[in-house]
Length: 327
Image 1: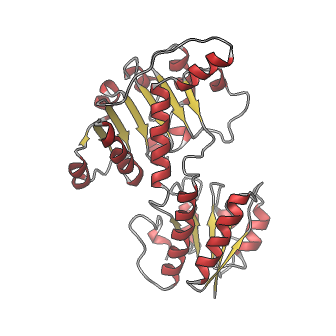
Image 2: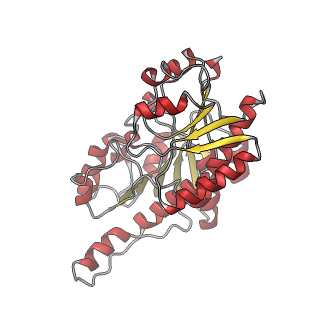
Image 3: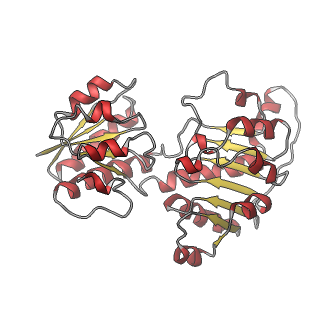
């Protein structure tokens, strides 16, 4: 029986239940599922566990040469709990013959719904209205509807496509930007591909779903924010460093854009002293867009399926393997 060790989650009732279900599902695949939550992250403990397992289910902590060089010969597979792999040194993993995979698509609905939640909350100034009420003032701050508005989606993969489907109920005109455009899917959904200039100058809301890469670092900077309409909002549920937070703060402080919503940050956890908390036109959540029971279970199930297919020598799903040169 192969062994999968999971380092994800905490010891709350939700994760206890999820891991019990994951353990039961793994048994149907002849896999032993072991849960070793890492809060805080203990690199030495992780290395010990990986030396006694065939695969590891990992979170967002850095994985590189210091771990790979001490993993031994047994564990040849790491599975990211989610889709981002910017904290994993792929070159080092490949050098040690370790496959890095991700649970592509498993959390798409949770993230897309959170993006939509941020868009709606920012457009209707929910945070400002709550702060005003808390101050004892009964003042009605006027927001904007989404029906029939133009929305820009940066990154038209699983999550971007899911958001486009949700927005169809609002009869939105949707523009998408993606370095590798899937024209067939766009045509099916009535989505138009556009460049960043068109999206930033014409859209009422912009939602970011791109991976964090050197090419996307501070993709949204002061110059891009300056292109936005005065009442437009921008949200990010992807990775924090795609938006220049200082530039965003300045734009929001000066009310040069309508609002923003962030679920991800350049440094996580976000410091309680962050100047972003000063603002009344931004919605902040602690990287929880994929944290729904449904999405979490989908990720556990897919991780187990990936391990099962990997050790049977079967082909993995499209986009699941991120370092095909590991062999």
